[in-house]
Image 1 (cartoon, helix red, strand yellow):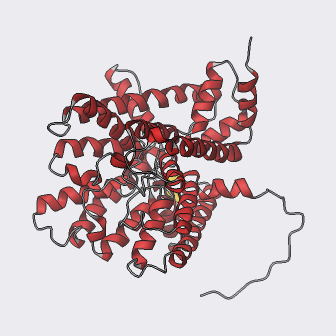
Image 2 (cartoon, helix red, strand yellow):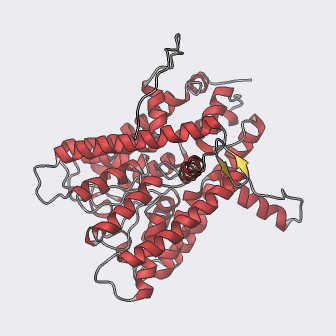
Image 3 (cartoon, one colour):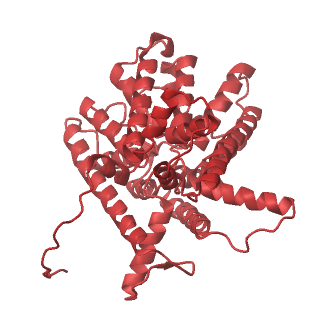
Length: 456
């Protein structure tokens, strides 16, 4: 059977999943930077190389932080490039690579299956993985297509059909991939009066933040119900934890934000409830905003920082430490307070190695953001208008690949922009993945003597 040498080389690269994943994302960012720097990609205002680099990174890492106006400073070609970068970044280059190799007849190695297992938390069987990859792509495009049709039907009045179609597709891709990019100058603030438009965006964001594993299980059970086929008695633990944690975060956030007040001037309860519900969903994943975040009080900003740090669910387009990590951490805390050895959730015992990895993930993420807070505080100390809570908000937003901002992104110094670029890259790949990229695994040759320390 004929197998192109290029694809064979591509297949060998998949055997080094961490470095290949980082390399492909970096390569895609480079290509996007070059394309966005071309005159054909730009509008009336010239976009410099650094800003093009920032936009490409934000699109590939599906963050949504912007230093220029996407709708005004980029042409239709440039906006199309951004949309494609969002789609590729949302699905992941390794998914496309694995699918191409399968179509061409190449067998995915066990190392590649393990890498894709870490991304999508799928079963490691080759046949199951191949089938799920196809369903992932099919469901992605079907959901985005349905969302685009819904958005097109409720597009702003007076918008031409051609422009409306592009706006619908762009926002459907951006919402489902949790990117937060918008061609509207005020993001979703321009669409506050269009409730149906915002509802479509909210549903797309929520679906994109659940994770492909959950979507596949939900749709699979629904399909079996329609066809009256036997189905599993209970849901998987992963799906139960994701749905429960997500529901608690959304409900708790709506209550918290309503009490704190997203905007001090907001007086109508139904309007406040709508803003709080939208931001409770968007703040963990997408980064769309229906209010001016900079006008929100400090307690609201701190709560949004917490939501952005948690992020979405495993195997989704969202960033952050993930909802399951929060659930495992809370279960571990409960077990330690009760002096229990086993960490349990939903009647199941969580493996020790997974509990340890979760603790390492959260600790690494916290340390990275603390370093980022210091870097930005130093780089932006020349601007007296920039407050500490704004710097913290910007840092965690970039790490969680959320894209919300208090408005200081365009005014960042060159050093600040470069750090945010690095943060978006690390946040998209995950701190543990980046650690595996730069660190070599060396087994311990000698175990040292044990001695206790005083704590507390």
